[in-house]
Image (cartoon, rainbow, N blue to C red; front, side, top):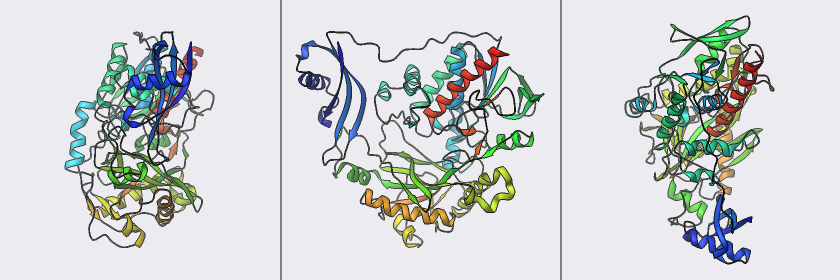
Length: 519
């Protein structure tokens, strides 16, 4: 017999299995000896009261053996009778490839960037020297933006697909089993590269192909049907379909599609700043104590409000993390956040962003479908100039930002390229500034102490999602005009984050299979 029960556990005992087992037995009014196993299905922290506790959803096995934690998927070699090109090797592309192999179809992956090992040199160059390789950086390369920017696996997209299956595949390839139970699962940028390498090896072992340093420079289209791609202006690859999973920073892909007359659509996104606090301050606010219990993780937060019809919210919050340069061109500045598995940095950072739409980029309407993209680019160029170049970030104390005055000094920061004091009122659009000011006052009421001179704003956070959508049929998931072309993931405008992108990759792979079986 088995029963699902919920337990409340003090942090002192959260890793004491025998204690948890005795608590379960007591609740069920049975002997602990009768419990064969207690499995934690979901683990979360409840910090609403003065003393934080863990909430556990468990399944208790009484005189019965437990099932396996997850079902391991067997990946078998595929032949070349059916081939699908996947443009981009981020989460959407990786999981599309794995699903195609499961379904007996050969994936041919083309990735403009480098493998995870060689990519590290380019990350060091942008961090230490301010040199941006436009094809190998924090956005482009094996594993996509997720590999070296944290690996947060929390998603609200639970209705889109099987989240547990995605997490299980990560575990199968080396991720810790804790991601299957934590309410906000996280892997860490120190562990993700090895997991990504393992996924690569699975694909190669099954006869899949992966081509690095291979940027798509053209699509081969005949009679409104895509039949292949051209790589680096010279190499031609032919296949039965193309999955386009290039990521939201692959602007050249958008321009190429438009040049070929392939329909695109503008879409809303969000822009703003990175806000950085001492992690100890966030811990004190969230856990109601100046000393964090050793069994509690670095505290996080999630904030949202509405200001003048603009949604303002925290985005990609990184407890115990660092801020990184996510630029993909030399004359722009883009920020993101990341953390390693231990989340032991003394800083907490989060995107603090404002939703924007067509009314916000009205003055760029001459750019047509690229109006929002131009709006995004202008903010990034302006921030680059305000930071003085070399990927330095313009920054301002939160208190000075609210008072509209230049900071005479700036707090220490996790951002390795460094900061330069700047008036962010002159860097960001006026409506963004106004919304941020209004939101921070509201957030300070929700988290007393959020506004402090110890916190600073670094600009800009602009790549929350794609400003472009590549329209597809809602049933076939194929582009509405081009047969055989399947837009996928964040870059196509259908996902936001690692897990939702992976889910979309799997869904598109399944739709491709249906398409190929009908040909």
